[in-house]
Length: 228
Image 1: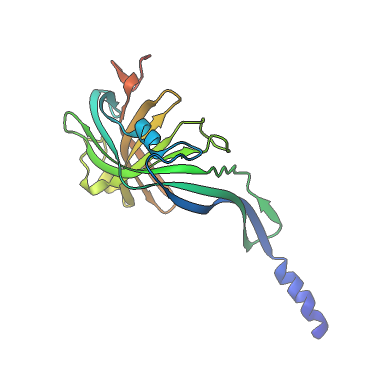
Image 2: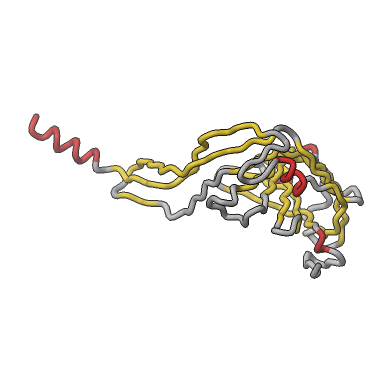
């Protein structure tokens, strides 16, 4: 019986599948002064890009009717410089062999600027308050974005927002709901924005884009931009 014991251990230890994947781990986070320079620039320079206060033409996504969207974005706290590194994660589960995830992971050092924004259509049909951050990656490091181009994603409380008729009953969705505003930039500046709501429940999620807007939506119909 004693001679069989190690053999049993080998069988048990061999009944696991190892999954390897890459993830980003935060190494440090430091507050940055408004005019303090980082590899991605200063918070003041980032705010000059993303601190939008203007009314933009746009369209409602449901039927393509025109909308005018009043956007006001402001800083909402201290900026921070975040340094990250790529690390390998290993998980064990029942099965055999080894699985390596092919999902590409990029972990840039980045400047983060907390933001708060009020977005309203001038007809009063849409009104939401959201917060989040603008993120600008180190231009000398790995990144999915072009150097000097920030990413802005903001979210808010769905229950305190106002929406136009959506074409379907969003209250029927049982998951956790939120509002969102996405602002897209390029090397020139602000290019396009979108606002709506989303929800998730378990492994299922839904996103409803309610309005799209930006400098290129002058005279737009059915969501198509005109050339600037």
